[in-house]
Length: 387
Ligand SMILES: *[C@@H]1O[C@H](CO)[C@@H](O)[C@H](O)[C@H]1NC(C)=O
Ligand SMILES: *[C@@H]1O[C@H](CO)[C@@H](O)[C@H](O)[C@H]1NC(C)=O
Ligand SMILES: *[C@@H]1O[C@H](CO)[C@@H](O)[C@H](O)[C@H]1NC(C)=O
Ligand SMILES: *[C@@H]1O[C@H](CO)[C@@H](O)[C@H](O)[C@H]1NC(C)=O
Ligand SMILES: *[C@@H]1O[C@H](CO)[C@@H](O)[C@H](O)[C@H]1NC(C)=O
Ligand SMILES: *[C@@H]1O[C@H](CO)[C@@H](O)[C@H](O)[C@H]1NC(C)=O
Ligand SMILES: *[C@@H]1O[C@H](CO)[C@@H](O)[C@H](O)[C@H]1NC(C)=O
Ligand SMILES: [Zn+2]
Image (cartoon, rainbow, N blue to C red; front, side, top):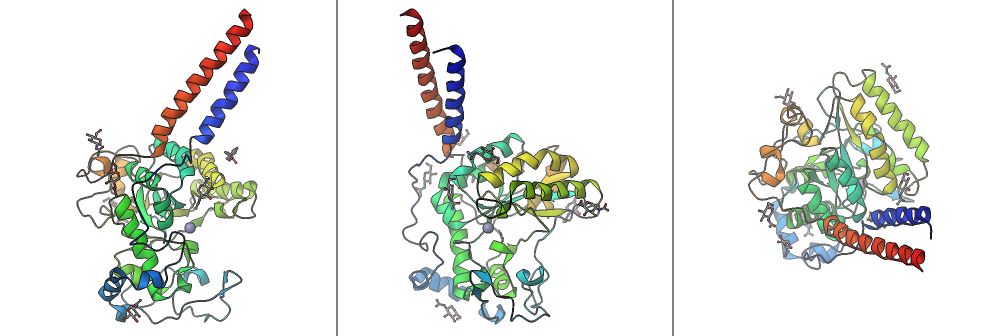
């Protein structure tokens, strides 16, 4: 075996170790068999009959929730055909309404008020496949807002904890990722409540923000979220990364042209007076690769890339009021988007867990196996030269 082929084999080996480093199964000490809906199932009677849900249900003021009938799905898509053109329910899916019409409801958070700034968000995590991507963000000293699916938090507890330990803002993205306006009040409440409970159980904090899957929200759903103390977070720039193959049918080139447009807008003054909040995903390798590929250009075209909480100066993004998060000024003034001091979750009152994500122990194992493989190959090469 020649030296070149040894190098090639080594290269392949290293590449495969890096690829395999993610998604190695591990045993989690968190259990979701009781006290939660079944994982990836929209909550039903098994959940509604529990004393916990009954008590929760009684704690809400249902008189404040508009009496709007659930919307319908036809062939898996929202049926908009019978809805009134006047948009009485401020149904986002109809014409992107973000200013509620029912009294007493807060407007959605849909853009970053800071001129030229980019509210960086990723939906649908956590997942074991994000380790490389989270390493990338960490390497860039970059915080983002993560909208987590409750069932994914249950499936990937270490990855959920890592997101928080890295300083990302954690928000709710429902338990099973349904079209929320199609659900009953009980289901809406359970989707939000059990995701928040899972995040508290695993990460230790209680988010005060959520994002509706597909943006599907109306005043009925908003009213329930608001009673749980959560802001409804939408976006004003959709990267359409979720449409890309294999999850959808768009080509990577089509997604590239969308990002290219964002970069132009960042440079040509489109956001000179107020900024953006984007829709991006940690859905699969494709969406996370695009995020990394375009990051330098976006950073060059926009003034600041910050999490939503910092865009809005929300310094207490969790119900645990002893935990603070950097305001916009604190984050960008510190010269990096990661910041230090009180804004660093790992130094805030000791309530943040240390990072226990799998990758550190996995890299250790991978390292050891890599070293032993190299040793074996060197011995093999040596012996073939000697004998
Ligand atoms: C799981 O283990 C972590 C780390 O040792 C610990 O902080 C946490 O409290 C444990 N959780 C449960 C539910 O046992
Ligand atoms: C929750 O409360 C509402 C209003 O009182 C009631 O109509 C509904 O049936 C309750 N849900 C459950 C599952 O008991
Ligand atoms: C999590 O990541 C794995 C590995 O990439 C993938 O097979 C799986 O579909 C992902 N799960 C979810 C729910 O996103
Ligand atoms: C800025 O760029 C975007 C994307 O290319 C374009 O749609 C928009 O018209 C441009 N605006 C100005 C003021 O040039
Ligand atoms: C992930 O996506 C990138 C860019 O599309 C591609 O180059 C790479 O081979 C993919 N990696 C895996 C493990 O699929
Ligand atoms: C956030 O705080 C900064 C500095 O005090 C201020 O300039 C900015 O207007 C605030 N933004 C919002 C959305 O409140
Ligand atoms: C977390 O890390 C700090 C600093 O390294 C250490 O003092 C502390 O004991 C760790 N806590 C846990 C629970 O591992
Ligand atoms: Zn989603």
